Length: 255
Image 1 (tube, helix red, strand yellow):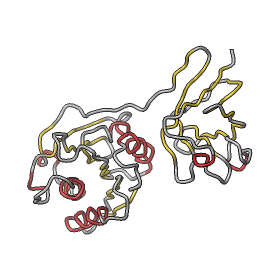
Image 2: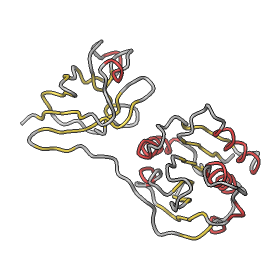
Image 3: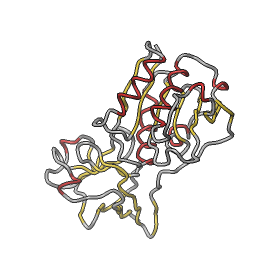
């Protein structure tokens, strides 16, 4: 059974997600729909790209990913389909799929142009329902991608901020918070160091499990998606220490 996986910033309060699923099921009743998340921070393309790139590889080959974090909806930004060796990605061309396809072989990129595969609409405010949902459903039924529109040479790309090293200090930053208030950083590898701090607060321990951390203090752990995370055992370090997205983490390196 073909899978369609949804990732959006729609939330679950207003019925947007239900409308998207209804359109998909109307076109392909047999398809399985999986929610990755609808809790991406509103308009945060980088967060959407990060979560998509961290999760797509765990889905079966042939999955169609619909990724809609779309502050430019209704503008000249292009709706696209990206076909890689194993997957399909349906999204606005604003960088939201760029981290996921970065390490994959791209076989084809299509700008969606054919109105026959879209819903008739009086407004350009809900492309998730009117364009991306029906297109993903038709792809799950096996239509040739060339029927959807014209081929493109590349997509818009965004980059995850990289840690910087200067004067024996590595500087990273918080790029996301999870549901538990843990702070995900952009650091994937930890060099030899003698001190780590954020906002003048020393991070006490680097551990391998959450319960090894020092209570009521900041600790560091390698998270399940490959990034180091700042956490407080059984607490929210975001709330307790008033941390914010973009706050800098300073790693003082051993000479």
